[in-house]
Length: 198
Image (cartoon, rainbow, N blue to C red; front, side):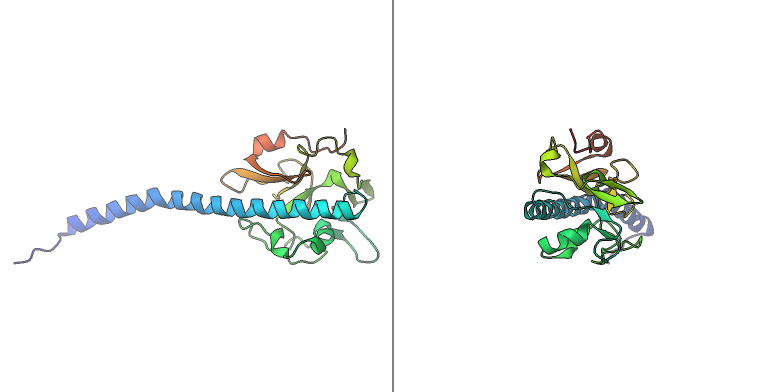
């Protein structure tokens, strides 16, 4: 005569499966976020290369990261200037960032890129102008942040915790003026000097 499982045995098996799932799901989530972090770093590397190509084409002068009115196109941001140097505007999107960039010039609060650009590299907004600066003015290009994971969807940013987001397993991805990309904790990132001038 065949003996089936008792209710207690079934409950024990279900409890063991639930415990294993509770242990493994966070591991899977971290592994998935690590893959997204790598994709984000690749995007930042492509953006740094596009920025460098722009700089070479424009007498080693950095592009504005924001300008209120340029030739009648209205408010525009750095993705507008870098778009001709990239093959695909999807590199403006971080896989861990919920909003997708719409490819337009204007920032409407919901369609901005997943990355901020260092406002001190060149911005014109609200009557105040920073730059754009020449590449030769940047004293330490390997230490000066160029683009990073945005905290608020704003394509321009001051380098503080209102603009920098540690969204990859509590790490923030940063692209630097010299073209390299690095991942670090928010506290370590905010210790960097974002001011490009000596």
